[in-house]
Image (tube, rainbow over all chains, first blue to last red; front, side, top):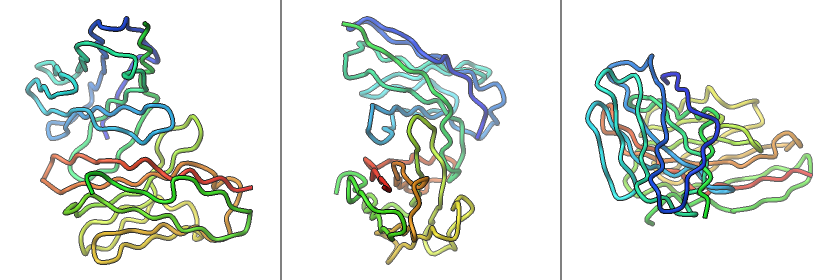
Amino acid sequence: DAKTTQPTSMDCAEGRAANLPCNHSTISGNEYVYWYRQIHSQGPQYIIHGLKNNETNEMASLIITEDRKSSTLILPHATLRDTAVYYCIGRRGYQKVTFGIGTKLQVIP
Amino acid sequence: GAGVSQSPSNKVTEKGKDVELRCDPISGHTALYWYRQSLGQGLEFLIYFQGNSAPDKSGLPSDRFSAERTGGSVSTLTIQRTQQEDSAVYLCASSSQTGLENIQYFGAGTRLSVL
């Protein structure tokens, strides 16, 4: 897996956009960027992934810089249920998932 | 089912007993992974199955741990002679192999407590 760096914690007001950054400067050309989150006492939940282009799905948007050295996960309208630890990982193929510390996002009412 | 199913959701056992944890992957997914997560820690890879290939057992912490996958679907993780340090959440994930893209979908986990 590519080494990733994320802030340890972030706060976001309910209803506002949450922008979670991730640095992955050593990512290789064929490694995808994946985002997962883990709500307390639950299994990790897949959010979104991408290679080069920005991606959007029903949960979030993923913005990847042109040099692929960093990315930002955007939750457009954060709710209290989005409070979780968010993990950014770089991997290819069937490689096992390795989570770092992640970013603990606290959505504030 | 719609997602990865694990059972039981909670298991309490006594030190020295054997336990079996079950994982039902998403239908059609050829790859299956076992991980464990100790309290406040990240994921620790245990074992990986892919189709009919020999499993990657490189993450199993000791010979007390074993896993099998029958018929390319359901998998069972067995821990023999459980120890207190085995207490953790055991997570199963499955994926459909699509080249470099590989989304792993996780189950809710089995919380194992060894007394």
